[in-house]
Length: 427
Ligand SMILES: Cc1cc2nc3c(=O)[nH]c(=O)nc-3n(C[C@H](O)[C@H](O)[C@H](O)COP(=O)(O)OP(=O)(O)OC[C@H]3O[C@@H](n4cnc5c(N)ncnc54)[C@H](O)[C@@H]3O)c2cc1C
Image (cartoon, rainbow, N blue to C red; front, side):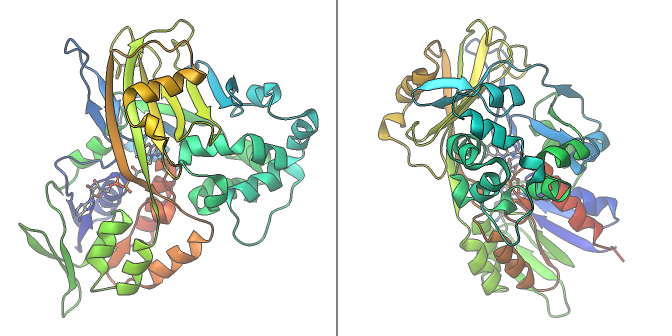
């Protein structure tokens, strides 16, 4: 039996520990905060009269591809999953108006942001050949879907999901896109890969990390402060209150804390990890009286820089058990790689900016800000080479996992961690 200490009790660390446990390793997870889950946590947010209600700190739902690693994990954990059902309106805010979102086929056909030649160009996608070398997201989409799509529509789609301009994002952020391209393109590859569903576990996204943590030995309030090699092999990990030895240590931490721990044992890896930029998101949660027609939830993505740092907003469907009955629960994103106008520093400014696109949005009855400092790493073009150097600079017995290695989406993390664990043996 080999002993492993996993540092970081977010989705990556908990899943790594679970896969190691299944392979016969003796595993302990150290988590700095007083609860497991990292960003993948569902927090209580009662209504004004104390009604039960919740908010999601990170992902609001899960994109699940049938037969993928996340699908397998959810099945193993036996979680009660709900589909999101038909969705309400989805919009793109651009040129001072809101248009149908181009994230669907009908939205693409109806969008006023592309001319008919640019719409025809989309149909050529299956015939576009692959490009050698590393690419940024803008170059990838301009090549596959045309310059018009990349210029007029892509910036809002990307800002609303990755909080940065497409030209600053390397393809390492979305490994699935490269995989689809290898299978014949976005359209053909997508058809071959099969459909994806939006799923929410009963109890919220945080139910996934809570279920993992319940099956594992997780030590909370335990911040790893030092990591040192043992003379006969293996590692000593220390926190203010504990000092333990292990055959291997898994760093499932953001780059900053990982770099601090690696500074003495692996200075090159520490320097490379420290150099990965991280995006700070500002997220406002608000509850409003229901606006008719928005019962199934709405989505709004804003073409940057028109929002002055406001990236978009999304609401729960009205029957979502995480919300308070009778109220619409909205989540508004700001920041990331975009500077935020000072008028958006407080809720009244955020509401005024939202109403530029959503004039019907009623006054909020409840608001709460949940800042997300260092929400996720910015994997710039060429990041893959940096990731390979980090892995090459780690001494034996140290492992590095997480969004900067596999991409920030939970499906990519699930695939990456599963493949990593499959390469290990406990003997
Ligand atoms: C607002 C927001 C929205 C998002 N939306 C989506 C989405 O829609 N879909 C999607 O797929 N993904 C989304 N993500 C991204 C996804 O949530 C993250 O990529 C993922 O949760 C990262 O998990 P992780 O375990 O790698 O890191 P983290 O969640 O950051 O966990 C790292 C853990 O390490 C702990 N830690 C730090 N230092 C130490 C130390 N020294 N010792 C011990 N523990 C330590 C931290 O307390 C933390 O719990 C979103 C993220 C945010 C913030």
